[in-house]
Amino acid sequence: MRNWLILFCIVVIGSMTCVTTMASLDRSVLKGGVGLWPDPWFIATLLDAYFGFLTFYLWVIYKETTWATRFGWLVSILLLGNFAMSAYLLWKVLRLRPFTIEALLLRDIPSGQSIEKASA
Image (cartoon, rainbow, N blue to C red; front, top):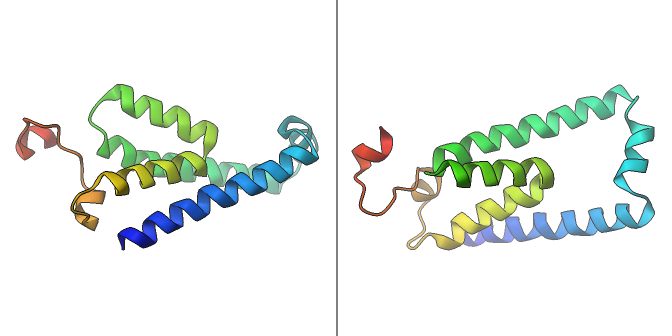
């Protein structure tokens, strides 16, 4: 599972880099947005993406133990979207030794703190 998650994150980051580079070479995001903004499907897709980012961010709030880290990831996710989300998941997967899906999903406990204190 660990290797599949690493591969998935690398594919997402690589794919997003390719399509973003291609789109940027065609025209700026601001020029593209001018033509798309009146389209209701563009607005629906944009809201869908940002609600997805915020849903993922709820897990980040749960996982991270400091507000500074939480805020940093919020800004990253809102500005970079799937780049930041894949980077966050990759960072978490690579740090886990030994890797278990439970350890990945559950809250990080600061060293010197018990499970009861961390969940309070």
